[in-house]
Length: 71
Image (cartoon, rainbow, N blue to C red; front, side, top):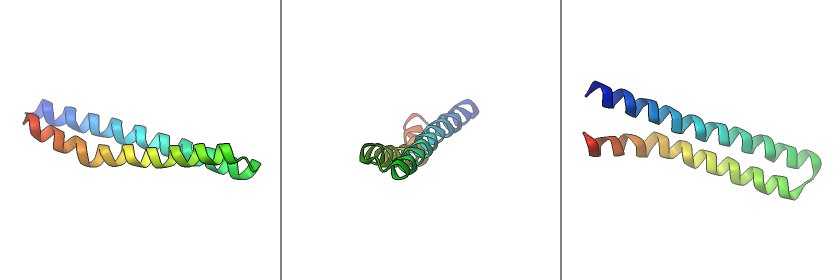
């Protein structure tokens, strides 16, 4: 039981970390798009920012629920 709990915690941290990284990368692209007045970079940055938030949200909410299936 302790192994599964630590594995779920590790997976949750990994997914939230990936989402946060994607969100930061999207924020940088968004600001770069505003700085260079580039609508393509702004669009890509916004999409990455929202996707990163979604992945982090999945990591926070869905991973523990999926762990309960196997418990």
